[in-house]
Length: 212
Image (cartoon, rainbow, N blue to C red; front, side, top):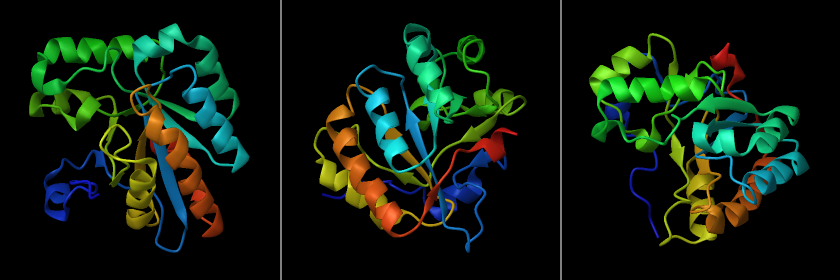
C-alpha cells in the first residue's frame, strides 16, 4: 500500500522558509540519518522504543508533547539518560491551522518550560505564516523528509518499514510516533528499519547540531 506525501515535493521544499529543516546536516558521503519520534512520551511505547534504539546503539530526537512530558517525568529522564535529544511539539498537540496565533505561541512557551530545546516541530506539520514568523524568532522548525505513516491504521508494520527503507538517504529526517495510536505499527516496524540501517552501516544520530 502506498502512502502519499512521504517526502515533501522538491518544489514545496523550495517554497518553505529558509529556517525550515527537512534534511539534517549530513553530507552525501556521510551515512547518517536522523530518526525522530513525535507525540510522546507514552508509557509502554516510548520505553520500548528506547530499548530498541539501545540494542542498535542508535540515538534519536523526540519531539515531546508538553502534557505528556509532564505526566511521564520518568520517561523524560530515561530519554535524557540514554543520550536522546528532546524537542518541542507544543504542550497540547495543537493544530496551528485551527488555533489563534497568540494561543499557539503560548502553548509552545508552556512546553518549553518542560522541554528546553531550540527545535520545534508543528503538530501535523500545520502552522500558519503568522505563527511561523513568530516561531522562527526563537526556534528552528524541523519537518521531515521521510514519513513512516505508522499512525495510519490502514497500514501494516511492513508497509511502514518499506516506506522508510525505500526513501531514506544520507541526511534524511525520518518521522515515527511514540504514541498509543501508532504503537501497533511502530513497535514492529522500527526493529525492521533499525536492522536494515545496521546492515547498511548507517549512523542514527540526534539533531543536536541543529539544536546548538
